[in-house]
Amino acid sequence: MSFKTIKLTDIEDNPYRNPESYQYDQGKINALKDSITDTSFWENLLARVTKDGRVQLAYGHHRLQALKQLLGDGHIELESIKVNVRPENQLTNERMLKIFAQENKDDWGESPHNLCMTVLQLQAHLKGLINASKDKDQFLKKIGDSGALKVDDRSFTRMKNKGVGASIIAQFLGGTWSRQTIQDALQVLENDEATFKLAQLLPSVTLANRFQKLVTKGVEGEGKDKTVVMADEGTQRKVADTIVKEGLTRAEVEEAVKINKESDTVDPLAAIKEVVERKKDALKVVKEMEADDKPAPKTAVEKVQISLEKVLNVITKVHEDLTDEDISRIKSGIDLLIEVLDSPPFEAIEDVDESEIGGSVEIINELDLGDGGGLLP
Image (cartoon, rainbow, N blue to C red):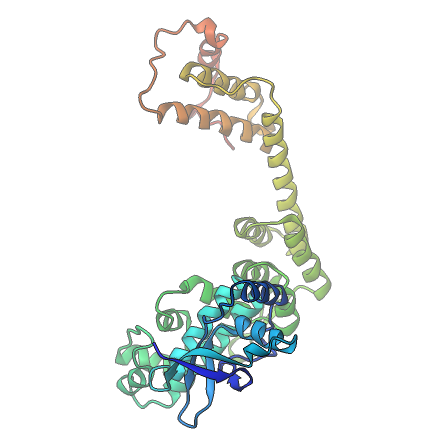
């Protein structure tokens, strides 16, 4: 590790950091300013010195901005600082890009805009190296040891012809990003400008990808004439706003995608509203159960009694009349039974008087459950 004293204003950003695409978080900068003022510690900066003597930051961009703002506020002791620097042959372009990608993910988490822009940059850089290489050996030599790539002649040819996909990007990053996250980002990038802009409103790139699938109405044409048809921008905005407002999860948006596909008329807004109503109904059932004045069951007998009561409240209904609420109650009763059976040691209940559980055994024996006793639709 080599520290050198460098004039603060001489330190440049990572060459892969586009200031228009990657905005700073002023809140984080303010927190760093307070920390530096209190502790005088700022040395978590890594930079390289290029062959022509330029100092380029690899990691620590928010910290560098905090130092520059403190200098502007009158902290003249920060005019020159100690920085951990490496030569360019150690911090190659590929290493600088990899470090920047990880810092960006650390700073912004699952932010769709920042992850997509980073993936786009990674893809473009790897594509450039592939196009400049005559074979896989030359390509791997250009990559160096900054990525654990598994490339054979066949995969190199495929990348040369079809482009760089999620798998090779994930390998280049050494497994620090999931392949699925990268794939989601690449698919979001395929959207038209309006859809991509709306997708950025969502809290994660995974949700942004599901949103894109939900507002896709279909595909027209074939081959080079193929066009993806999206819902109108007004509908897309309402869908995005609903996802954010209701705090919907990936699974819930995927449920809306499924509803939309199975519907006779493709209507993403109606599908997302249906998911919201289902979620509200399920939460209503949970609240009703929590509002029950009965104490939480402790023994196996108590758990069996309550589980049977939950089931018997709805089991005598005509099968076709069962609602989502009824099914939720049945499932909660079954969950209690499973809890009893999975809890060692299992309390013996064979000798329990049937009157202790309200005669439930007799009622169940009288029910005609049909083949297999199926309760759920």
